[in-house]
Image 1 (cartoon, rainbow, N blue to C red):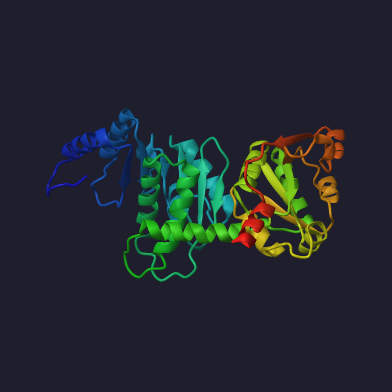
Image 2: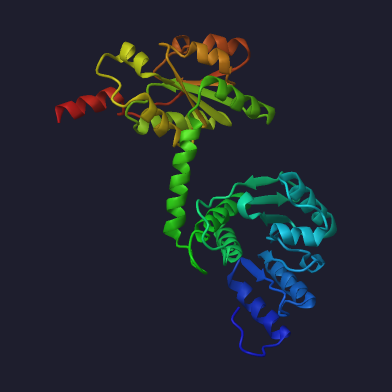
Length: 358
């Protein structure tokens, strides 16, 4: 809210109430300079609550009682220590201090900024999430806190859920500390950073069977349903994407078994695959529907299926149930088989034939 010199506190609150008619998020950046006194802060939060707006606050001082009713506070590690008197050096200590603050102050969530250790999102009725630092090289931390709260507010105002909004704020902070002075962040920079992040995460989804089994064990502890499908996935086309989307819809986490180059040559002939197994695996792993990719050297994935023991086994509807490798194994221990509908007009063999004809 823009203010003329000597504008009184009552006028400030009234201006904010007027602005809230057209906005869904209110940001209070408290520098402790006197503008946001306790009574004014309480009045502003009440006004936002009355309008159904979210309230995001960069707090100051030790008394957070005046922030009661806020949707989210963004203290740094030192500010959280000052507000609670509790240590904030480790992940667990930050979470414990945050929970203690919830007990004293009626706020919904905290996003604690922790410099080189990234950020920690703590929700009153949910689990804490630790976001690792995104910065590659730090030149200047000026304005990083403002970048965090501005990105958060913009994302929340656009309807983005809090965890995803926090992730975007973390990415934005990682960009701005790589600039000299107080700098702005452009949307294109965030998009580029996210694309780079997706590629790195995609590569991390490609794993050996032992590594996959560890990941799957963790998913099972969380009560997640595991799905499995397999194939060559040589030239990825809409039919593949449709199959993977249908497979992921049947489970919480999807593991894809990928034929190695040697097994593809045995199955498809010496001219295949077109793309090497590493390239095929990275492309598969870059898809949001895929959670893990495991390359297998055998002609069939039966050994992989027996190891993974998926809750649901997925193949295309061009197979009959009796033809699906591993179907009996999965059904024997109580799992199920799902035959996905095929997207008409798409196959790698046809695509290669058309390329040759051209």
